[in-house]
Length: 184
Image: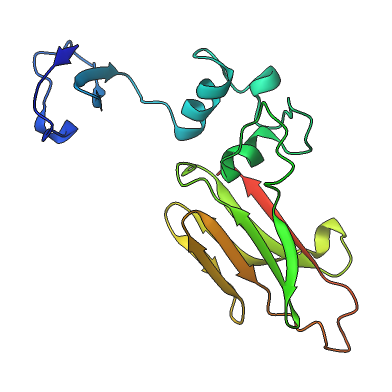
């Protein structure tokens, strides 16, 4: 560990030399302390998981991606993507559906640190698993890509999506929106 007094430093200002063969790592600055972390740095979801379930937490038990330890109906993966606390029920941070004029809308928070997930907004008229159509997708590499006719904005971590299906169209009797979170 190295302490330093300058606040103008970044991790790019430091190099590690004379390391044993095969040793790799990254520098991390916290406050005025520089730490060299050997090995592969944890992926963002592992850092998040350890912040809520302890420094040795892995993708098992209550800390598993598909677990719901607070019993609020949202998996840890979903809570991670939305930036909510997986150990406390969060009844007010569910995605909110509505309508703007004749079009369905969906609003939800997105965790900007969750760079290792894919978010997908889908639509269906009958809720059958095979009948969902993708309307928008987010990955860290591409950002949001949405279907023609839909609108999507993200401001200060809040996503606002408007569907292209006109609810006054006589052919649309029912329409559903879904937010799906997956890992690549």
